[in-house]
Length: 146
Image (cartoon, rainbow, N blue to C red; front, side):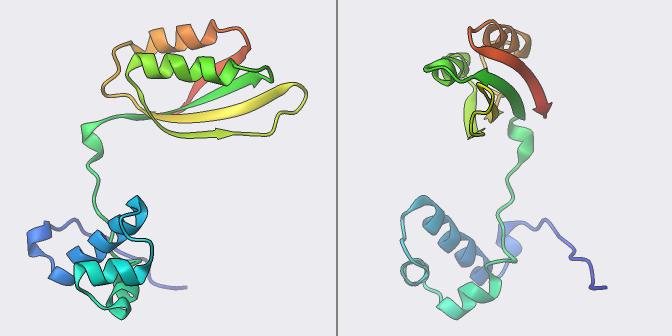
């Protein structure tokens, strides 16, 4: 049995510069600022070998206290515009949609999960649930996690 990995939260100022540069190179690749590892490492000034040595060990800390992420489960009828109507309510509520996953429709219905950042919502969670549930074509709408 292997040893369990331990994690530490450390201020960026206390880290060796290489860790900061690896995190920056990873960010550049995720955002499309750099298309390859070689381009990203050149731009931040590190070698590719240093990047590969630390890439799996360096992750930025995202303070989850700044917002609240909720995952919703929705069962929708397989009719044109139903998902679009649901997304319109989310957009109007001020929620920031992070992910949308939809299954292939079977028996006339499709399961959808939506994860959304809800800290800036203008609607209450109860109002969001009520409005989405009332839409034509929404069979089921509930909170899955959060």
